[in-house]
Length: 286
Image 1 (spheres, rainbow, N blue to C red):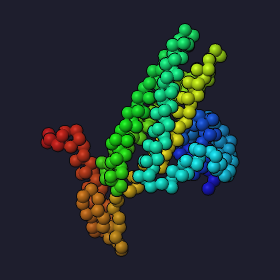
Image 2 (image 1 turned 135 degrees about the vertical axis):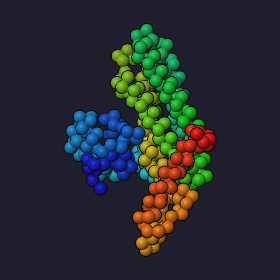
Image 3 (image 1 turned 120 degrees about the horizontal axis):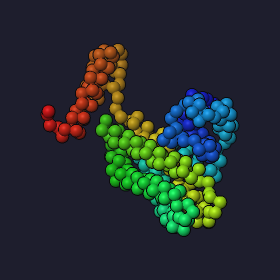
Image 4 (image 1 turned 90 degrees about the vertical axis):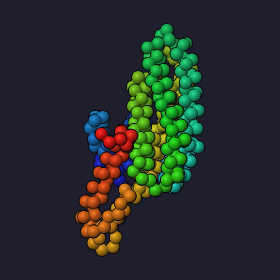
C-alpha cells in the first residue's frame, strides 16, 4: 500500500511504525492530532506535500528494524486481544512514564532554583505547564487502571455507556497533547540556552523521552486498542433474506430492512434521551 495524501498520519503509523522517528523529527503529531488527511496537514503546516509523501513512502518500503523498539512494539501490540493490550499498556507505558515523570520533576525542580537568575521566566512557565501535565497523566493512569480498563475487561462486548466511558479517555489524551505542544513551543522543541549545564540538558532529554513514549502510548490506545473495543459493540444485523431483524438498546427489531433501520434510529434516540435524563436530572421528572 502506497502512502497517499488522503491518508492520516495515524493511518501511516499504524501500517508503517518505522516512520515514527521521521515524524518526531518534523514535530508532527500522529496520536491526538493525527487524524487529518496528509494534504490538509501539509497545507496547514506549509510543508511540501510531495516531499513529505516521498520520504514517508521511502521509509515504508524499508523493512522494520527489529532493533527499533517502537516499531516492533506497535506491530506486536496489534496482534494482541483487547484485554492483552490493556495489560501491555499498564506493564510498559504506565511504568516507563511514571519513572520518567518523577525523574523530570526532580531535575526541573533543581534547575528552576539554580538557573532562576537568568532563565526565571522560562523555567517558571515550564515548571507550571509540566506539573499540570504530570498531575493530569498520573490521575489519568489511575482512572485507567482502577476504573476504565477493568470495565473493558469485564465487558468484552460493550454497551453504549461503556463505550462512552472509554471515549472520555480520548478527550483526556487531547488535553495532555495540548499541554505537550505548549511545552514544546515554550522550549523551542527543547533547544538549550547557551549557558545550560548538564542538569539542564538532562532535564530536556528526559522530557523528550517522556513525550515520545506518550505519543506512542496514546497512538496505541486511540488508534488500535479503543477502536478494536468499539467494534465489539453490538449492532443491528440483517437476518437472511430481505428482513432487517436485529437487537440493540434492549429492543428487538424485525420487518423490512428500511423499517428496521427506522426503528433502530428511534430506539437509539430514546436511549440517548434516557441517558441524558438520568445523568443530569437524577431520573426526576421536570
